Image 1 (tube, one colour):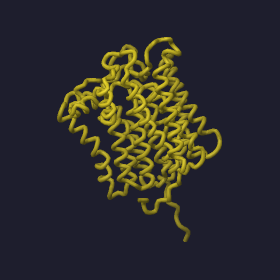
Image 2: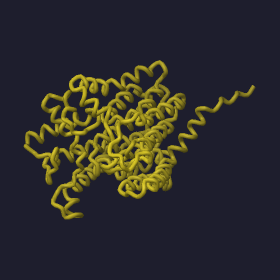
Image 3: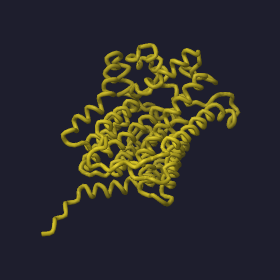
Image 4: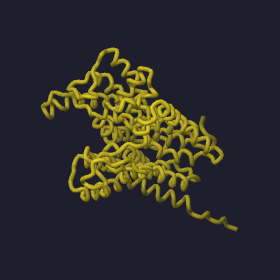
Length: 406
């Protein structure tokens, strides 16, 4: 039901058609790259599937066997809540019935289970593209919506899914985008459920929670908070009760390893091999809470999306070691904001190109000072539209009321 006082949403008659085209291309491209990229570019007779792709699969086996609460006993180094193992379970049950092979814990050249799991999870990941378009439509975008879908697919989604195999990050992004859209429409209960589902896939989605809560009416905020946290909290409690120590290790105490790719922060020495979990990781959530509180009385959906984009970007500045898939939420939201602010012109294309450049930078490893100097500059340019919108919106939120003429 449309909330009272909210504008009627724009219609998007080509939503599913365009999504089907983009999703089909994404599935074919990702599966084709996995099967043939190594043979074509390196001459190696082995499929190209990220080792991270297989991390939630052992946990899904626990679900299939009816031992889901004990899934973190699998010790697979999967460090997120159980959303991904749960959605993987039907496909894993099929691969078990067919006797297909997996590339975990030992790497094998041709893991036949990927022929089922790869297309299935890639198709699921494209829900993020669908939600990006629906959010953009809610922000008033009526032209170039297919171009927006292509931009979100070609930049953040390819990095997250095709290269890293982190489908759980794409599904968390889809939940976050849906929550922002529903919040803008005044559908606070559905928004709370959407952000709860996002957190169930990846904990970083908590940065969207303050926006969802503070945009609800004052008398409903506690209820909205409880509705959002109910599902992830329930699954966390069940797993903690069944296997306390491994669940705590996976969800709360996961360390970072500077020597395993990625880029370490400047305050981490080159000789450090392991960085314990630190409270600094919660800073993006704190920033989102502060921005959400400041904007609580402003009915400006574009401001809310911009606030989450900036909060998501701060994660790249506080994580001990950063990888390219950390950039996906900020990049996707920046692209959506750019399309919403610029109905014509090349600004959205420039934002997408800057996001692509930021992703590509993770493949090079010059001096950390040089890398971080250039990366922060590119990141700031990519976020120029969210930053401008955030500055203008917060200034309106804090401006004193204009006295009425006598």
